[in-house]
Image (cartoon, rainbow, N blue to C red; front, side, top):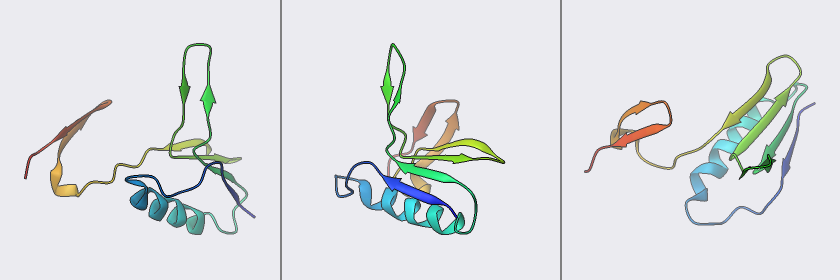
Length: 88
């Protein structure tokens, strides 16, 4: 059975879309053996990063999901880490 842990409360600016994705991921993993987190800190000597959703699955490994709350028609393209947006 999957377990999902919320490490900080929802409700900040722009988190409505992130909360919807988190709930959908939880539902998709229902009945699976996995551990998921909302905003789990990933710490190295140089940086601290908090992906929106982190999933540890014994079969699939680690999955990191970063949610962007914007309409798809604003997305002009993605190349690596660069997101190009169009203006309405």
